[in-house]
Structures are given as structure tokens and as C-alpha cells.
Image 1 (tube, helix red, strand yellow):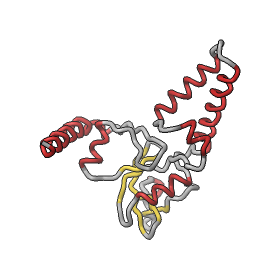
Image 2 (cartoon, one colour):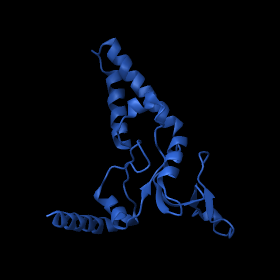
Image 3 (cartoon, helix red, strand yellow):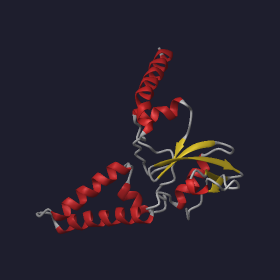
Image 4 (cartoon, one colour):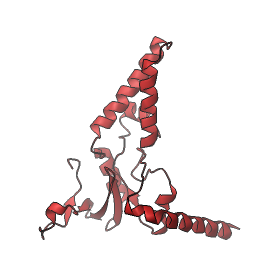
Length: 183
């Protein structure tokens, strides 16, 4: 019975991936979570990565030592966080709330805004360290950042991004660049 369940799951993944293939020409909708580098909302389109046994990762991760941001963002995905921001902004303009409740909502909104502003590059120092820890030595992964997919390779403990920018087209000595927090 377990083998049959695995087979049916695999068939569903293949079906989902085949249906998603035409969308690859225009891109995939990816919704990151902020808990760890492999934290993505699962969608049928992401089944493609599973079927091909390709790791998809990002480095937009909250530092566990940042208790305020961790509490405000929680386990939300990016889309859920944007929905929460709309709720908090709407709540701020709604009358009838107690002063304490309004203050809590304002504080939560400010903490989320601060986290998003500090990580506007969609890469955090903690996220980069966590990605380095998750990616195996000599492993190629697909790296998601700023709505773009890139190829990343880990060599000697460092992450390198495959350079695909048109500006480097005629630069034969540029192939990989180190992925660092200042990027």
C-alpha cells in the first residue's frame, strides 16, 4: 500500500509539472518563507524541482536572535506577510480599538516594515550563513532572489553565483562571483 501511495504521488507530481511547463516561459510564482533557506510555499509548479531532484533555496531568512522580527513575521510566507501588513494598516485607520490594541498593531507593523527595509535585497547575513550550511560541498542549486532564479555552486565552503548578466557577455574571465551579504 505504501508503494502504491508513492507511485500515485509521483504520478501527481509529474502531472502537475507537465501542466506547469508552459508557464516556465514567463516565469514561476514563488512565495518564500523566512524560517530557513528551503522555506517555500509548495505549489504544483515547484514540483518540477522535486522531480528533477534540484534544490531550490534562498537567503531571505530571519536571524533567530532577532526576537522582535521573528515574533512579528512568525511562520508567514511573503504573501501572508503582505496580507498581514494590509490588515495592520487597515486596523490603524479603524476606530473603536483600545489604545493598547492599536499600539500593539502599530508596533507589529513597524517591526515588519523594519525587517523588510533591512532585508530589501532579499538576502540577510543569517540567511546567507544558513544557505551555506544547507548547500552541500560541490552542489549546484537553484537560488531564488528578487524574483530571479540563478545557479549557485558551493566550493570550499563558499557560495558562487553563475554570472549571466549581459554586461559580462564579452568578459571571458568572469564566470562565477562570490555570493556575499553586500550583493
